[in-house]
Image 1 (cartoon, helix red, strand yellow):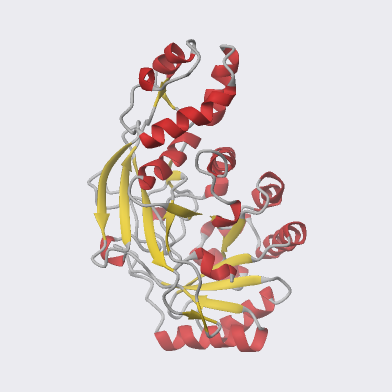
Image 2 (cartoon, rainbow, N blue to C red; image 1 turned 90 degrees about the horizontal axis):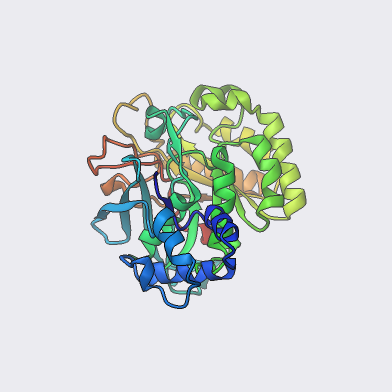
Amino acid sequence: MAYRSVFDGSVLKAEFEKAGINAQFIPLIWKHVLQNPDCKWDEIPSLPSAAYPLLNSKFLPSTSTLHSVTHSTDGVTSKLLVKLQSGAFVEAVVMRYDTRLGKYAGKPRPGGPRSTLCVSSQVGCKMGCKFCATGTMGFKSNLSTGEIIEQLVHASRISNIRNIVFMGMGEPLNNYLALVEAVRMMTRSPFQLSPRRITVSTVGIIPAINKLQCDLPNLNLAVSLHAPVQEIRCQIMPAARAFPLGKLMDALHSYQWNSQQKIFIEYIMLDGVNDEEEHAHQLGKLLETLEVVVNLIPFNPVGNLSQFRTSSDAKVKCFQIVLREKYNIRTTVRKEMGQDISGACGQLVVNQGDGKSAGNAGLLADIEDLHL
């Protein structure tokens, strides 16, 4: 029998209830594991006597192991290669910031050092986006809630994590139940992250978007749009055929009406494909009735994805100016982090567990920067 992660919260709670053990002890177990990564169950004090044999027979403090950690040369990005119990690999990426650097709206920025963790939700991905290395893997498996949470546990021993972005390998909304449970656990003891510091990115799974605001209120939603018209979107994102742009926009209007929150729009800049001034006007007209922040993302060439080229700085700047000045849409240009360790947007793909890379981390300069 395969052991389950102690961070598979619903499974652990069900087993406790079946054994007549009060579930109030579960956060205490999680806290102890966070503080004592190599602990034995018998070392946890003050649990009911029935809890110890149950934990020993069915659960592990961690079902995954931290296979390797690679640091960028500037020291601000760390890529964690995590080996799952199945033998598969996923990646999580830690990005460190000091928000006091630079200015916002001409004024000094508040805050201080903080870290954002980019987590994976699946091994591989079935969306098949043509500009993303993970799309070449195909879909392998969903991660369990525990396997998602364990990425946070591993990362917390390297850096004090304040923000979470579900922008790693996989389409989070295609692993909906595990995603919802993982986010709920992240916002409770012992992690206690604010839902406003958690962002879920999606290519636009409409049924899940329609459910998300009810299941996870106050969460940040980021949509990988990448094209202003359906034809181009289908060319570079085959999954878009199942989610027509018009219906996706209807879902986003409904989501925003219910949540009263900004929506973040991710737009990868592909030279000659979606980066012309005409495309900027099309995007502006598409989004002008929504309250959004558009994040323009430089394309990172990877492996055999040579059919695409990176847009010039001049094109990116022109695109940004059109959206800002013609349509009054707040538009940022993503500062990429971790390119030298293949940890930037779209650069990650499993290589048979050789430690090189595994995932699809879309890394923001800092998601909180977009909230100001």
